[in-house]
Length: 312
Ligand code: AHG
Ligand code: MN
Ligand code: MN
Image (cartoon, rainbow, N blue to C red; front, side):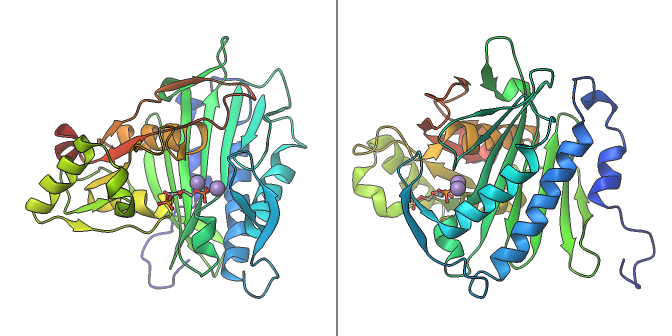
């Protein structure tokens, strides 16, 4: 705790234990799952910062299920989450962007956890922001995943600070990792996306492949003197959009009609987060029937402030 602080800071653990009642009606240990997630994020944060010193730079020769080269950091972070959850009985199922298939663990648990262990692994190689995305779904009889059965979702951003954003059905909060105590401390509660922003975020290098609808939309933003900001790490680009408003776009293009962002690991968690924080989302992927065949499906994703999304 900072000596200058007048009040005791609230740790993520304390925050979880307060008012968790509406969330714990499902079978399973809700706060323990979230505790494991924060521990994994703390570990990964340390190694992201030491990446050049800890022999974690560079790529393996194998491709993951999405056909992307796996960075050593992807493999490491995946093993951190895997070690935490695959030996536990906390989950019905565990799905990771870096695992080919879903791991089924305990049929008596109600929870399915999806993890993008490192989002923006390309950026992490040169010490630019990266993140981890988590999403806890309540199991349904027909194995459907949608924002409707998400219990909570969030991300950890590894940037100039390590930031944890947590959103559930009734609460939202942002925590900062305190390097002195190793705790995530509450920095902001009840987050609300601004109704309008001043930035748009898109990989505009693909402009020649964009459909006319997207070209026209981007021109409209330019006419209104919007600025372009694009990190290339979804967590970082969404974090800016959440705090400052504006719009993020990763549309289908003429040469990529499946999209790039992953439904289970990226689109559904961020759809839940943005909707809960008062923003708006457009995507063709509002639900998915979970199986080893569909778990790595991709789609288009546009999200941000109400004003900008209303005329997309
Ligand atoms: P990941 O590192 O998990 O594979 O995700 C990379 C994603 C996402 O973070 C980002 O928004 C997008 O790739 C960037 O794609 P482009 O390089 O095509 O802009
Ligand atoms: Mn990702
Ligand atoms: Mn990833």
